[in-house]
Image 1 (cartoon, helix red, strand yellow):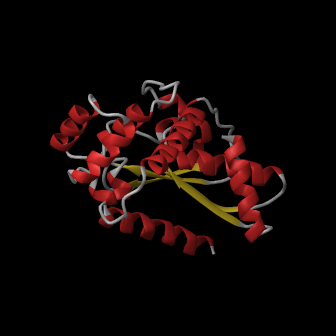
Image 2 (tube, one colour; image 1 turned 120 degrees about the vertical axis):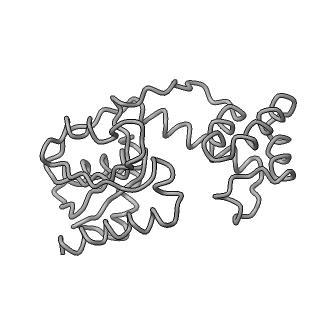
Length: 212
């Protein structure tokens, strides 16, 4: 995580050498944004806004760790929460007898792609594999990264339909520095649903206006 954050900070400072900076990230992206804020604060820069969008704290992530990368396993994991149940069962059946490239081709051929990517052009299997490798590496890094307490306000946008509070452990870490705003939907639909994204965008805009 620190290495990823350093790379992003370098890119940002090429465009904007000095703060104040506004940083936010959804899910694992929030962990990286938080680390970016830590790096910038350490060199004397100011953070005007740091937002975590339903970012799971490492102590709350109890999902099974997938140590070794397996392209079909990662593809199925990615699709499991993004496709309808009947579609996903069909994909799993196909996966039993096909290699990764063949499976990707059949998903496109049988129109089993998630609704969120229907408007995108078809990707080559190698491009999808590269995306999955990156996703696996980020997930693995975040799962082993412990956050240090920052001395700045942190805004936490919490999906209200989750099975548990995604902000509780952040509250334990940050105390009164954490400001929680409840958002519609669950972890995924908060970002995938257009109406929910509008609510989130309005909430962030209101905070930025107040900070200006």
